[in-house]
Image 1: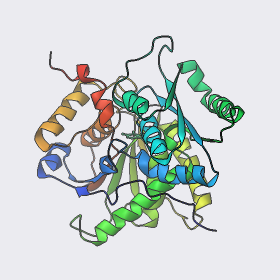
Image 2: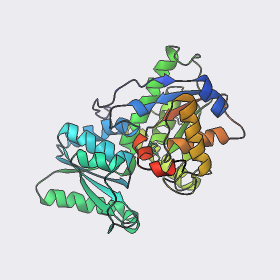
Image 3: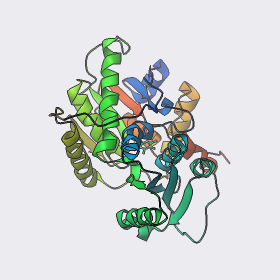
Length: 327
Ligand SMILES: *Cc1c(COP(=O)(O)O)cnc(C)c1O
């Protein structure tokens, strides 16, 4: 079986980074996989998934990609920018509390607009039925003579998650080069979890390339039962595309660090983000990476030596300056 096609869109390999100050703030030997540096404005974990998803769109001769996400979706931003780069039209369905009140064009939403994407606001109720809505918009594209390619939320399906199988191969090469002191596998790989595709790819790839036997997925929405199911089914779909991937690392989903709500960080989490930035220069975001690293630092029993996959999300921070102001 041939391997699924892949475009080269990301700036790779991303660095492995560590600092004494960060080790102290987290309480263990922490290596950071800088996937916040997979590119320019499109940077973050979604670029690795889009290398596969947009290759499939090209193979189908698509003219238009259709996807969905939250109001400040990093995935929608990355998709809109990468679609523009490839000359594809793009429609993004974004979930907002009240579609009657249009949010300001800032941060991720501004970048979607700059990329020329069509932005459609949908309600939380419509979001529940997003698969049908994506299909409806695809039909609309077809009726207008275009050829749509639909990408699910977060780019999280079997195909997209292969980007993180490859990321673990990249980490194995870095370990073998001695870039993380020891060549031994990490005690754990830690990542924020929003739709599950990244964690699923990491779990498959970490086993295949001996990067770790434990993946800690820190949920930023939903709960442990939901993500155990979601990650399991994405990993199953991915291994159907890469049948040589037989094993899977153990995935521990933590749902105690979601904070007050999706995209809302607690005061303690925001203080931690500020502390990390001020003492290390590493910038986390309040939606994903800040909650994930805060979760790791809060664990009673911590791994000794871990890899934190920094999945990006800087625009998510820049979208909510008021929550960080000290006034
Ligand atoms: C999308 C996203 C995640 C979560 O990845 P999933 O594959 O959706 O679980 C984590 N961090 C950032 C910054 C993201 O944009």
